[in-house]
Length: 153
Image (cartoon, rainbow, N blue to C red; front, side, top):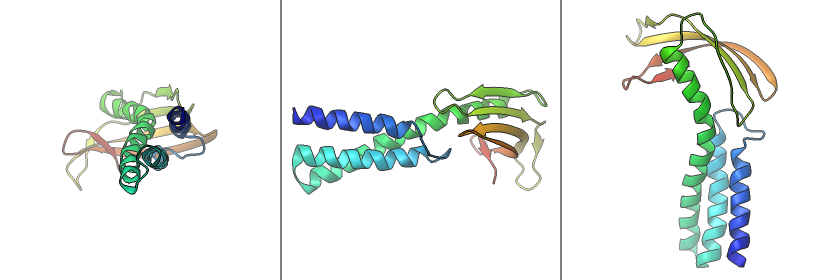
């Protein structure tokens, strides 16, 4: 019975840490790792009753929490990557993240070769509603050595 209570606590904690409530975009993996580490430490101590079990639980919980938290951000990254890769220039692509409710309208510009790094880049206008706040910005993404689009600072 004791282990069922612990498992229930961890499951609820993991699920709520993945919702991203009050967490800015891009930080969910880190928050998930911290939450997972705490839950893993509790489980490790409850099962092994020693420091080694606690440390193993912390390590495993941290890894799983990071993976769960990071999955939510992947949805938007995949959408942005699709727009940069296949989006028609000057045509807006729009989506709503089903997990966060954040809304995006992204209008890519024509691709060009950046003379500074000799990489293919694309600029895009982004209209977003994130955590209920409207944000307009421009971003530039360039292909990395593996052909993936990476946002530029």
